[in-house]
Structures are given as C-alpha cells and as structure tokens.
Image (cartoon, rainbow over all chains, first blue to last red; front, side, top):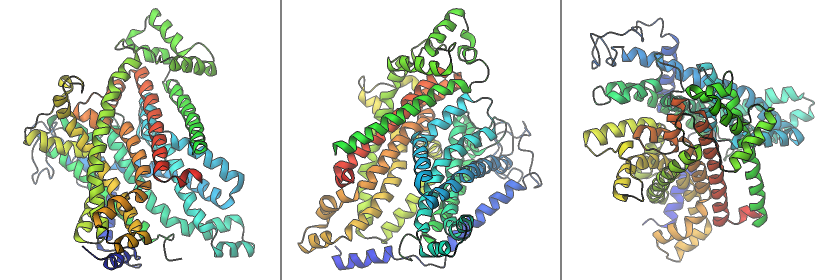
Length: 291
Length: 316
C-alpha cells in the first residue's frame, strides 16, 4: 500500500492545474467532428445525397454498400442521407432552445448578480420555484397537450424550461467576477453599468457560458431523442435521430444497421459536445487556483 | 434541525401548490373545447356531466382550479373516458413497479459506484483511475434509450435471455423470481447511468477528503487503508453524493418512461406513454401531478439525509 506521503504527492499531481495553454489533440478532434456535423446539416440539400424520403422497394433493409453507405431502412430509404438530414432536427432543437434559454436567462443572471438587492432576490426566488418543477415531466406534459406538435413548439418548451438553469449558472459565474478589483476599479473610474456588464463582466463569464451551452445542447439532443420515443418529436416521415432509433426497434433483428448508425451518430455528437464543454470548463476555471 | 426541516417543509408545500396549478392548467392547453377533446368518442351527455363535475368546466377558471383541487385532495383524479377506470386506480397499480425498479437500480448503483470511487481515489491518476474516468465520461454521453436498444440487441436477442413482455409481467408479491427476471434488464440500464454519475461525484470528494489532516493522523496511527476509506473518509465525502442521488432518483422517476416503454414494464412511465398515444388526457394529467410531487418529495428526503450525514448544514 502506498504511504501517506506518496499519496499526498499523487493527490497534488492530480489537483494541479492542467496545462494552462494546451487544450489537447482530442479537443480539436471533437471540434472538427462538430464542425463536420454542422456543415453536413447546413449543406444537406446541396450535397449529392439521395432524397431522405424517397422509398425504394427494390432495396429494402439492405446492408451497407457503395450505393447506400449505411444501407437502407424497411421502406428502402437511404440511411446515410436520413442520418445527415436527421441531424438537422437535433441541431436545430439544441441551438434553438439554448438560444431562448441563454437569451433570457443569461442577461437576467448577469444583471441579478451585478445589481444584487431586491431584483436579485425576486428573480432568484422565481427561478428557484420554476426550477423545482421537474423539467422533463413539464416538457412531456406540455407537448402532449399542446397540439399539433411542431419543432418550433418543442424548441419553445425546452428553451423556456432551460431559462432558470441558465440563470442560476450565469448568476453564480458573474457573482465570482463582480467582486474582483478590476470591476471595482472600473466603477470608481465612473464607467456606466452597461459598460461594466458588457466590457468587464461578459468576457469573463463567456467561457463558462459557452461550456454550459455545449453541455446544454447535448442535453437537449438527448431529450429530443426521448421525446421521439413518446411520439412527441417531429412527425414522421421527417427523419430525426430519435425517430430513426425508435422506428428501428420493431425490426432490430432484421436490420440492426437501422438502429446502429443513428445511435452512433448521436453518441459521437454528444460525446464531442460534452468533451469540449468539459475541457473548456477546466481550462477557464477561474474559481480554483489561478486568481 | 427542526427549524431547518420546518422551513424546507414550507418550501415543499409552496412548490407542490405551484405544481398543482401547472398540472391543472394543462387541460387549457388543449385546442378548442377541452371537454370535447377529453371525451373524444365517449362524448355523451352523461359523460359530459361527469367531466364537468370533475373539472368544474362551466365555471370561471379560478373556481375550476378549486373544484379540481378539492377532488384531487379527496383522491379523485377523475375517471378515464377511454378505459373507464379511475385514474387513481391506474396510478396505484403502476407506482409500485417504478419504486421497485428504482430501489433495485439504486442498490446496484451504490454497490458498484462506492468501491469503484474508492479504488480510484486511493491512487488518483493510476491506470485504473484514468480508465474509469474515460469510461464513465463516455457512458455519460450515451442516452438511456440507446443503451436499451443495444442491450436488447445483445442480451435479449443474441444470448436468448428471456425478455418478459408486459403480458407476462408478474407482481413481486405473486412470484418474485419471475418478477426479478423481468426487472433485471431495466434495473441494470438505470443503474449504469447512476453509477457513472455517483462514481464521478464521490471520487472527487474522496480525493479532497483524503488530503485532510485527520486522515494523515489516522494513517500515522497505522489504521488500515480499507478502514480509513470506509469508516473515516466515506461519510464526510458523501454530502454531494447524496445531493446528486436525490436529483438523480427524481430523474429516474420522471425519466424512467423510456426504459419502461422499451422493455414493456408497466410502470407509471409506460402508462404515461400509452395514455399520450390514446389521448387519455386525464390519466396524463394525473401521472404528471403524481410524478412531479414524487420528485419533489424525493429531493426533500435526500435533503434530510444530508443533514443526518452532516448536521452542520441544518444549522447554517
């Protein structure tokens, strides 16, 4: 067994700040992968892909081949094309709802942490109450009653549910920065509140916000998948990763490709998002050491 | 302690009230006349009168809430106009299944996560620690439904392990062997998700605790590593773990529907999915109410457990 000294040394090694400059190769691989996903989703119409809705009964449940990279589904639709077009739903849902969540939650969080006082108290209590409502159940409940369902409604419901979470994270992050000397110095110099919020606080809160945003997008992508299983995501035949995995369940034995490719696409996408988010958080972690 | 708990209890009641308003208001999200939508094909004058009595639909909205709330407090969540079964009866039949699934998965999770976190924290940065770190990070990114699909593909189909469908589901009290067989796969899936979370939280807290001076003192007294980890380090390291467990178990109650639906386990989640498919809105509303309150109560219980582990928290 290791002596206590050895152990203390080991512990120190681990808790030491990771290399401050470098983000590592894996980080950039993940960034590249995300960029590739975004580009493919954006250019899906221009790319030489078969129509994701065209059915071909001469090639049903075909395995991967040169003709169909990922094979075809039970209606003879090209799986590769459906995976690419399906990523649009995930990416739109993720970015759209985070846009709402951050658009409302982030300014409120920064303002509350900067101003403090009554505004902070009221906002924090309201957000705490909203946060107590189990978000996933609220999302399912609202989407099952609010018919007909569209991607926009899904984005709105998830986005609103994200507001209190974003508020809490951004408020905490801003609180840590707002008491720093340089903020006080800017105040003493007579800088306006807007200036301090935008020029002094925002650049320091932004890295934490970006890291949380990426992890938020990953959560929403998972949520869209879950909603697809409930039939609460976009209506078929529109492809989405969740829809595809759900549709594959009944013919899993016959055509495992149908489940494996969208599942792999989703997992790699989530892994990349989580990894980048996690690295950014440790990289820019101002609360430990550094200051 | 009592004051702390009383204050938490007041918050709890307040949040439950907010939830009840939310659950009540769902009906009004329905397009057009809610009565017509809820009754569906069962739209007869008789049923309509029953629904009006349940929801107070012909009165002002505020009054409707109190009518509905009064019914709910009397255990009357309405009667489904599709299955003709009282909503509460449906929920009471399904809820124990969720509880069993959660208890099984949590016993499994803690039994795996605690020793793993200890072996990692004992030698941070060792190959085992690095492997577990990378592995748990990867598992965190895999949604439960993908895990289920893959496990069903591998376990149930390739290994021909019996995969009990809803028709053959047997309650625990009737035949516990068959029951556990059908609960094994869902519990394992839920446990995998929980283990990764618990492992990461406990590992980092254990590493911090092991740096404390009283641990060094214990070591210098020659106390064994195992005893130090279990008797000296575990309890002070488990505050964040319990907090996470509270949130996570609430998440399992609210998010367990995927696993239940995919594996034909007739719990609340399964019933919820079916009811959404059938547009059985009263059942959906009832489940939303019960599950939401359940999540809040679970969080409350874990807040209480935390104060038992570290009484200082209640005094602050």
